[in-house]
Image (cartoon, rainbow, N blue to C red; front, side):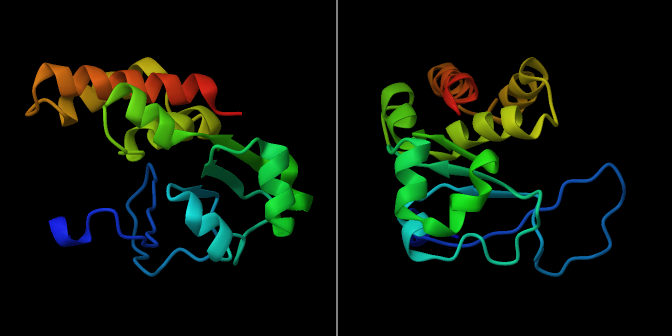
Length: 150
């Protein structure tokens, strides 16, 4: 999407595997649901097609208990709900509301897929075309969300 779509709410699906992925249909039974826009947690059915093991990582300024009180569908999943204020973190570190990088930090921690240091080194390579100030801000945002998600 171009700049006209920046910030627009959307639903996206990603698959991560050590093996070649042949199925390119929408992933309907997710292991993880990451909600980057807090409004979507309130307006969409984020529990649709979940599994008994699906974990939820939600950007919000609310505590986990407050969020679950607002979204009753999460009540029986409380042990699999994680919250982090990716917007505040991005404002503090990057200087603008760009919650994607902090959400990656939260995902790295909750998923356990990567060690934080390994992930940060690879993100530095991805961001290498940007000025060092931007790279450093994103590394700080990722690390902070990793430490703050609960």
